[in-house]
Image (cartoon, rainbow over all chains, first blue to last red; front, side, top):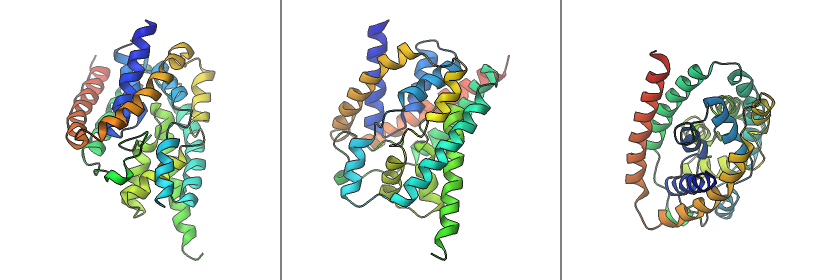
Length: 135
Length: 127
């Protein structure tokens, strides 16, 4: 069990670094289908894993190239913190099957966004991140 | 200053919306934030990604996480076991991305995600 979870983390990390997709988009289905977690438990655990600043190494490269809008970044951080609490409060009382259905719809949207994601230039393909992740 | 305020307010509102999706679906939030900044606020792709990365440095999902943790919806053991793998895997994936063609793989993966999402929505609501 322990080994499976360790390997699962490794596989998720490779996909995130390789494709530049958000960790949660891969993590949540992996926890639901491979570890047979309930939808709520998978989402809560995914949020836990995403707490550490995993994008720090990639950010350094963007910062050096002047590709960071600090003012907008701070606004986004505050907005997402507040919105996140609201989203969490909405999700918790929702029945698991409805949450699962809604997550399915979100995956479809994420699939479209991934399909049309522009190719990152090599000079910005970050050292630790390769294809920059969207979070 | 004259026209930065409406822009700031717009970015803040968009970020709130991304935050709601983040809390609702247990994701990081950048998946939506990057296209939002690019489409509605005329950010170039790199600037959108760089700005999204700095927005995600503080634990922006902390309050959403708190809402789940309070309801008992966090598996600490699995979470702690996954973190080292995700970290090492991320470095490995970045290394691979420079040697392979991520664009083609992204499209293959997008098709998989579309199929999985459709199947999950149908399975959840049809019995």
